[in-house]
Length: 329
Image 1 (cartoon, helix red, strand yellow):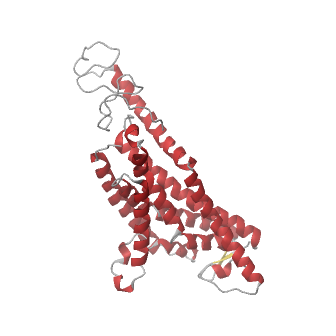
Image 2: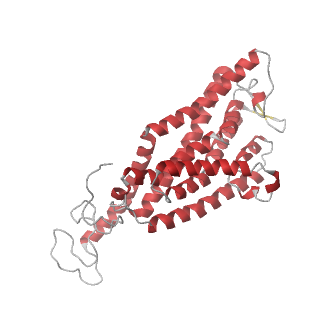
Image 3: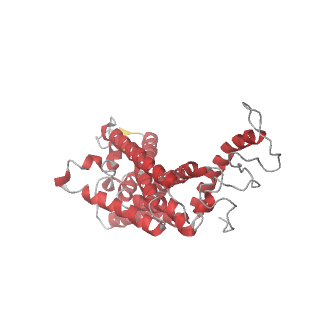
């Protein structure tokens, strides 16, 4: 983002006073557009400049979304997070391979079946990273979305663009959702590759004890990866809301990660059973039911509904805060 001086009239950060000479700029109400006489269009007709502006808005919005995606995935921090996440399944696979060679074979759910079928490394890796690593990575990206721009002094310049605050917020959330999917796929693809190299592949034995083909097992692994990514959407909305509350990217990231840790702790306290179904991480591991025959959808659907509620509530809160916030940086 260029650090050049903002166009004239951008002092309030809303983009209401763009320079009339800027590309795609719209003149203030009651004034003539640059390069035209001060005449007013006949009543009931639209000025030619209005039609051009309306036609350019969808293209500008798509450009904003694309720009946010590129910016997010070009950052070294994002690439480092994806690299760490991809390394976790490899470490798990190597550790299990060494333990098997030494005569070991005990472990948590999914882990004991990895030696017989490398596809289970995908399920084990997602189960291992979902409680901590994946949500922390998402918390960093979502928490820094708005606060990071404010901290670096680029947020005010972004708001000069014709897209406006709502589209900018949507672009930031879209980039966060894209990272949720990319992070989950990084774990799943790395686990599948490591499992294929270190262990045999074949028919999959479900939790119910039945056997399904490797192809069907692969499709269920893909479905599980998508469900895990969707499970993080509520957290992404929460992180985006936190990001609108402060101008410090570090503070927003730390707060979002702290909320993840707090929710995880509360979810393990038996005395708070009545609260558990309303905590966003409560149904995260419900993806295990996809490995049953037949698939049990109850908790999976509850998880999707809960994430939808968190997305709606905190997404609306982020919009309400961001569209009324006085941008000074």
